[in-house]
Length: 95
Image 1 (tube, rainbow, N blue to C red):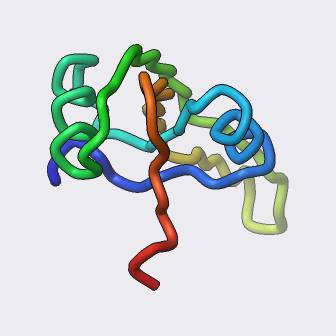
Image 2: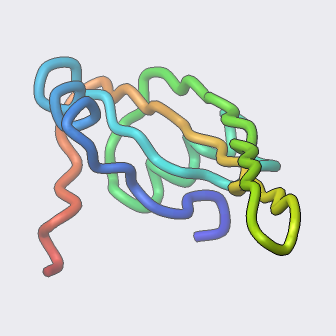
């Protein structure tokens, strides 16, 4: 599983999965929609209707300390919202 990194589980994604059968995954930055679709279909055995991707840039922070200016940033993230034609994905079945 090189394309899919992990599923995203928040209140908003749980609501989307229940109401619209949309599931959100964190994916590799170099992944395209066709690769994401094939990976989800192979991993979970479902039929994918649509894939939408979102690129989030890093968040930059600046702090003033005794030793001077500290600059930092978070990592950039790419997410994919996958809509299924039918069926569901159970992330918690193997716990």
